[in-house]
Length: 151
Length: 362
Image (tube, rainbow over all chains, first blue to last red; front, side, top):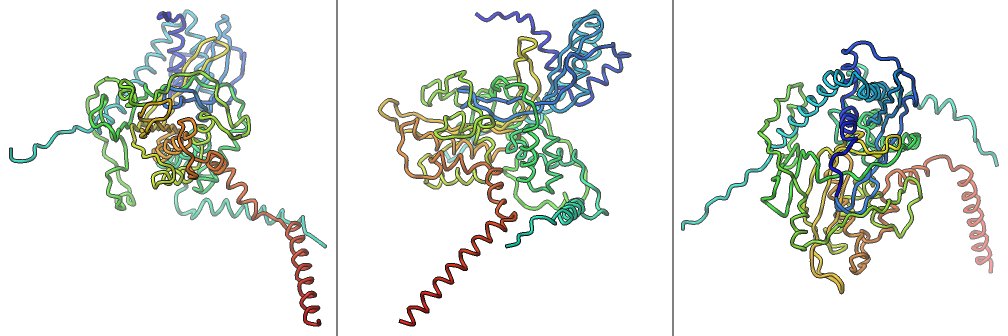
């Protein structure tokens, strides 16, 4: 049996949202919440790649599909909370903002950051998904059978 | 013998300056931005990402601009850039069954769960030039329709339930990586798929077409073609768990091919697989056909001498950067090589003439 209550589920969810946010969005939402907390780098923002894998036949043995660009960083707030970011693309400022949010989510500011940043990102992401899905749905074929012959 | 090996610097500098000017074109015409290329030439961007083997639409768009639209040159630029990046790790295999599909069609089943979704396709257009695009104009918003949140399972799942198609059981063997170890044959399927997904589209298309025309018997149906976004998840060593680090668009094609059975396997359908970065449908279908042709040995079929069955031939000629590198190098200065050839030909001619003179004298 798999443990269904993943203790890291919350953090996975917010890191995923932060990684997929459009360029500059996390920083803008963070800015709106007031001055940034002081922090020191554990790993300054760095651009690299991740090898993306697929599976033969969708379900079989893995193979290397190609790389994607990724930016990562790690920082520590004055209070000691450590924030990490691994985000798609070459976006050092976005990685810093994402790591700050990750760190703040482990502090007393969590509720405020959840409402001011993560909930907004989630709403925007689901609106984008819904718009695309609705356009796809409009191109779904509705087959109907023609009645042919006389009897 | 004197061979000039210096003196080209000024000519090269001036050639590059002129290249920059020609790239810009008529300055009276507005300059193209990288964002415009990314948004409006997205299928070119997708091809450069797929064959450059690096998913980054902005970089691919920049490469296309720098290469003046020469996509192989752009792919070359991306491959070169890629080698400068430190690699943070490998993702968990993407789950294409959970794809948010823009397009999903099957040529084998009309009514299937999730339906036939055409998406933004060129199919069923009349292929007539649209002169409206030559004038500026706003595009009306695409129609929308209410969605049902029903899952969109893989078509091969249905056939699997009846045991009519070969299974692709999960397996976690770490795959070989041709960007780390040189490609060598015999190549297992994982290595072949890596080579094919970044292979030249034209080459892959021609190889696939040759199988349809009878060079290697495998009559393929497109069991399913899907295009859409999938999240990419990676284990983060510092954290000790996996998180989604982004989302990429992929095209996946599963072909269904007849198989008469062998000593150990009953007659059933077999599969070819294509998975490519971006919206790259022609490439993904081609990849699936070539993948299937290359599987003759593991399926116990005969080698018919068809080029598409010959892994060494296909894999060693599929990479357009290797090919163009070797092809184009012959236009670079070979003065010394050629001088020696010239000397040799002159010598042979002297000998031949001398021999003729002697024969005539005898």
